[in-house]
Each structure stands twice: as C-alpha cells, then as structure tokens.
Length: 357
Picture 1: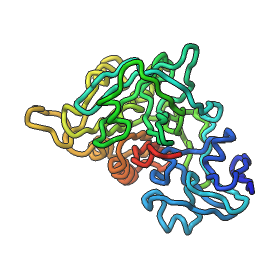
Picture 2: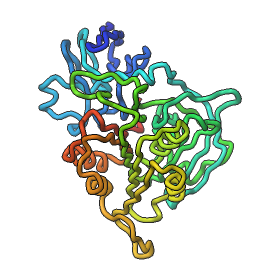
Picture 3: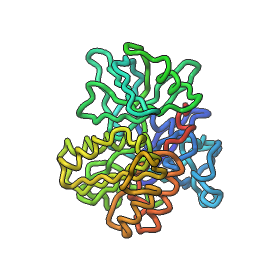
C-alpha cells in the first residue's frame, strides 16, 4: 500500500511504496531532500513529523537522540511510513534536476599520492558526461549488491575524467582491490551523483524549514571556512576549484587536518591556490607530526585551529568533510563559537555510508 507524503513548507507531494523510505521515495520522484550517508549515521536528513506515523528504522543515536525523537524528529533515510505523512524537511532544489544514473566507466590511470592514498582517474563512455554539483559523491557498484561511496575530487567544469581519492582501508573490499589488483583499462560501474554537500549561495536553491535548517541568510559574499580531514580533501578540492572557476570573491579559508606530513598527499595544490587567489588561504594542521617532518606549522586538532583563528563565527559559513570523530568535534566547537546551525554543511565519511542501498 502506497502512502502520500507532503512537505509542509513547499507543498511538494510524493508517494511512498510499501517498505520504502521517505528519502528513497523522494529521490525516486525528483524531490531532493538533504542527505548524505543514507544509513542513519550522519543526521543530515533529519526533519520533523507534523502528522502521521513511521517505522523509525535503525539509526545511530548521535544522529538523532531520544529527546529529538520524542519532539517529533525523524531520519528520513530510515523512516518508513505507516500512514500518510506531513513533514518538515530541507529541500535542495539545486540538485533536483540532476538525474541520478547508473553509468559504466573505465579506469584510465592509478596514481599513488601517498602511502595509503590512490588517485583514480575514470573516463565515461564516448559521448557521456556526468552532471553533478561540486562536493557530491558517487557509489562504485560491486558484486553481491555491495557498493562503496567516494566523493568526486573533480570540479564540474573539468569532468573529461572523474577523479577519486581512495584511502587504503585494511581489509577493505574495494580499496584493497584498488591497491593490489586494479589495472588501467579495468571497467567499473557507478551510481551518481549523490548527496547534498556543496557550497551554498543565492542560487543554491535550498529551502528553509521550520526547524532552523536551510539557507536562511546565505550570501555568496559571506566568508567560508572549509575543513578537510584526510581524504575529506577530495570534495573540498572540487568545491574550491569550482569556486575559483566561477570567479567567487568571498573570503575562503581551508584547514586540512591530517596526522603527519606524509598524509598531506597534495600539499602543493592548495599552496598554489593561495598564490593565485588573494581571497584564499590554506592552513595545514598535523595532529601527530613525526620527528622527520621537521614541522613548524600548526599542530593539534583541526577544529581547535579553526576556533583559535575564528573565535567569533557568527558571520561565517563552515563546510566540513572527513571522518565522523572530526565532524562531531567540529560541530560542537563551531556552535560554541557562534556559528548559526543553518550555516554548517558537512559530509561525514561514515563507514556505513559505503553500504547504503
């Protein structure tokens, strides 16, 4: 039995099939709600039930607390309706006309950037192009209905080949293949583009909901702080290269947090950006510099470096991408320093993110 869902703020309506999640049904019918992991771990898709009942599904308590649930919150990537629903949710109109497709591609080059990071260059079939927003990701489709998610490190205007930054995870199904077996000319399939992580502006098309999330007050001139952890640099690279190509003049500050110097796998690139663009600055932060690094730069946690440099974030926007501990620490810190909740955008590299259906 199908149920109907209506988004209160916009009046958008869509049908949800039996055992289908609210998010899955919305995406299937061209209604793009804010989302990232699709597995109940990151909280990006969190909204509010105005009326109706749902099966809340399985989720991580850090994504939605019991208090939030009692107040009417739901994670729409997990919520399966038991009745017709009226909801509050973030709609992202900037992505609604971009089709999510399954496409074949060929591995054109494998380039080892660091001891545990490989750059993959993928080429689509002749005449095919992937339309996407800078910051979005794709799912590599594997046998056995498995999939692994990777952010596109390519800017949309330079998509002749798609670039992925793959970190080698011990025992990892796909990353192990990349580092040990994959060869140039191998064929892959992927689904994408996915996610709603991209730089906002007056033309971003993100609607505000009553829960205080959205693009309220978003301005293309507001200073933006971008925070990357490890290979979280990949979508940040896409966002920045896209901003530079468009001639964006807002102040841009990149903080890239890694353990040691060897983990800064493309250090010359952001340094070059800083030399070319007077409104951009780059701050690498090492949490565990090694003696051989001879490091004289910033040390410690990357979120603490941001707070130290920007004690008042009330006039900024923050974009963050990287491992969950970094994202969670950053969330707490930026709110303590005055960042409005509706100006924090993040892509948490959850492990479950990789196996979302």
